Each structure stands twice: as structure tokens, then as C-alpha cells.
Length: 427
Image 1 (tube, one colour):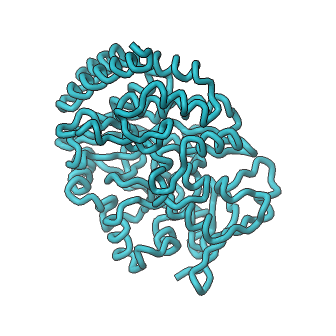
Image 2 (tube, helix red, strand yellow):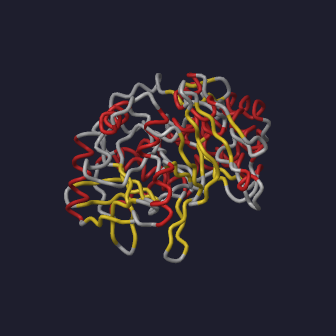
């Protein structure tokens, strides 16, 4: 097995990950990359000012590219005959299409990748996509078929697959060709999760928050939420990789620390990260704070640090990425509202029903944001939600989405928004 991986950012070699005899990882930047105009780091946790970075941050970054799903990791480990706990070995086999612009390539694969001789796409018809979605729905580790040559890796616990969409066709790419869309079928754990996520992201977008573009699509008898990757960009006939990392990666934290109650970043930590690195500090802090408020309003319980990301680009350009993986817990039966918790504390509280005006005021003091402006924005969002969600519900019906979760979601979001508006107004 190789002891070194070449790191490419949108095709440019920027450095190498080295794995020594004792399994310690280092990342070493190329001098040519560090000195080039427009260079940017692999991660904010690995600044260009230092040529070499140690095992802790490298491990955190690499694990952050892999699924948070032991079943998937175990399947990959068996397929590639490596340990499921060896991040270097796993990335060696699935690192050619990751989140962001990065590709991790074995040195003996570099020439083939650069020459484009392995660039190919297996084009799929609707039935073949449906069969893949059915297989994934029934076996959450079936991200790819055993015969597929193109591999990819994405973080998260949900079952998903990534495909290329080009010129009206869907396909499985390999070589330099990137995937462009993520497809997530219903999991069975929460009925209608695809529709739930789509509606919540549509609602966030209608409220002015930047969000990933989503559609709920049907392929024969299978349904999936289809997420257009914001880390891919069409340039003529070419598809460019755009670099990004999640907040845990940016802070050098392992994915196991994504929740605040497991030692992960607090809202204040994220705000300070944005104030330190963002090219548009005020705008990105406001977006992040409004996103926290939105998740409070809709009962979005999974807005942990890995569900916020940063876009890294030429030079020191850093921006908060569009929101993704946003969904509400509220439309599901047997939910005890007294036990529903957010992923990050607001004013010292996790529990949804314990967060009110006083907690948001305390939050504003902790994060050094304007309390009056924040409360006014939360009231505005709460006031707008009932009408907006009614409009979105009508639109989804025209699109042919019929899952009962949509009607339940519209009802509970409208009711909760009115309650939150009253709480914030003290009426």
C-alpha cells in the first residue's frame, strides 16, 4: 500500500499526505503552491505559513471527508481490504472525488489522472437510477455498485449517492470527471425526509438565507432529494471543483466532535471563526446567526458544526457556504417537545421549549451581536413563515409531491412560528 498521497486542488498539485511506519500522518505543501499567486490552504487548520502540518489536523481533515456511517466504512474496508479505522487507507481508495476541490491520488495514479485516460462516464437511464436508489434504500451502505470504477466520498450519516448530470443525462463519472449532484432516498427512519429537507431549504431560501439548490425527483417508483453541489461550477463545457471544508475541519476537530454537547464548536466559536477568516465578516456572521434562529423556529435539530461549511478560494477569499442538510423534527409523530434539543446551545439552553427571548438576548451578548437587530430579525422570519410555507406547500403539490409529511410540516411550522413570534414579542 502507498505511503503517500498527492493532494490536488481542482487538478493542481499542492502537497502530499505522508504516512510513516508508525501510522503518523503529515501534510507537506509544495513550495511552488505556497508561493503562487492566489494560493489558498487545503484547510484553515493547515495555513500556508507553515509548510508541514502534523497528524492531529491531518487526521481531522481526512476523517471529515468520510461518511459518519460505520456501516458504510465497514463495507468500504472489506471491499478494499483495509481497516475501517485507517483513514489514510480509506481515503487512498475513495479520495478522487471528495467534498470541495480536493482529490487525494496515489502517486502511481497521477499520470493516468492527469492524462485523462481514465476519464469516462457510465451513463444511466431512469430505470438504472431507480434500481440504484432502491438498492441504497434497502442497504444504506450501497453507495456505489460493486462494478463501478468511479468512487466518491461525502460526509454525513444519511445514505446517498453522487452522480454527474450533464447535457440532460445522469451518469457515474471516474477519473478527473467530478460528480455534480447528491441523491438521497428516504431512509425509513423518518418518512418523507426528502420532502421535509426540500421544503425547509425552500423556506430558508425564501427568507433570504443562502441555500443549496434542491429538487425532489422521481425515478420510476423511487423518490430522492436531489441536491445540486455548490462545490461544483460549470465553466463552458467544463465542470470545476470549488474548494470547501466544514467547520470541524476548519478548526482541526474530528467529526466525532461535531455536536456541542460532545465537545464540538459552540455558536461563539463559529462566530469567531467567521470574524477571523471570512472575507465578508459581517454578512457571514449575520447569515450564521440567522441560520441558528431559523433552525430554532423550525425545530431543526441537526444543525451541528459539520452542517456549516466554508468556501475557500483564490488568495484569502473565505465565505460561509450555502446551507444544506436542514430539516424539521416537528412533523413526526410521538415527538416529545419537552425533549427536543438543538445541536448548539442558545443562551445556555439546548431544549427547544426552553429557548425564548431571554436566551436569545443572552446569546447576543455572548456572540457580541446587536440584540435588538437579532430579535427583530427573528420576529420578521417568524411572521413570514406561515404565508411562505403555504406558498411552498402549494408549489410542491403542483410539482407532484404528495407525501403526507408536507401537509403536517406546513401545519406545525405555521403554528410554531406564531408561537415563537408571541414569545419574542413577550405577548
